[in-house]
Length: 313
Image (tube, rainbow, N blue to C red; front, side):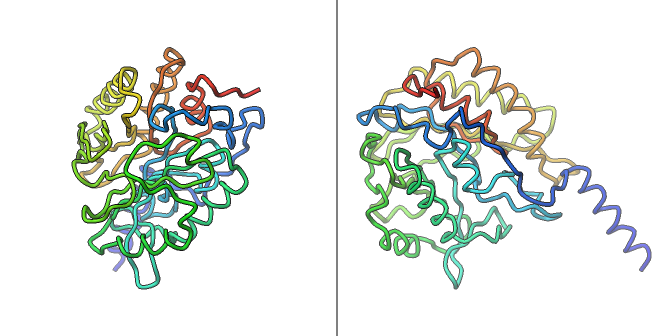
């Protein structure tokens, strides 16, 4: 019995040291001069959404902390806080439950309902009608989410853009734009279901040309630079991409310690300063959509200020 208790204590200590447990979500102070809640306000209405540099978050709902949840924790900010620092692309992964739709990250129930996600989004857009939010919805587990997602949309259909094309910003101000990573037998939202690359980069066209970089599992710490190389190559690609082409660049990734403990935050700590350095040298370029783990105001700011129409005075 004593041996079993000792094993549990040692395991807990190891996980604590490796994961850096945090007891709650992060408190943030938004710099008012950045105006990060309304950075889209001076971008012309006729600008295609695909030609705007947009900061986003990977696994946006995975901000719950705790011994087990820290294994898959990707964010420290809540949905509302992410939007307030400038994020305009949310990566929401859902499972169908008896009571509705719940955010999951792999096998981890994030104890965040889709209702709450939408309430946060609509509240933000009501307060900041110059903005839009791309919400990418992925089926995370085996239970089909299609019918339930459609039912949620029908409740507030006027607040969604559901066409499989690239809209102008003027068409979608104050609305959610659906990117769909579930079911190929439905006809609403931008179809990212077919052809989405798995742990690599690739192009596909389901009515809209997309280039996606999602290299996330690079095995071990010694391969960490491969993650940044993939991110940088996609940033370089975005400079010459077509105006009506979506470029989606995941800066997120991990490697394993002890063969099973993913080092998500350590990867972010490696990639983020390199991204800031890149942004400093290429401040006038279009980046497309750039997704981060553990997003911060500085990271979001580095992305959206590449839009030449963004005036923060």
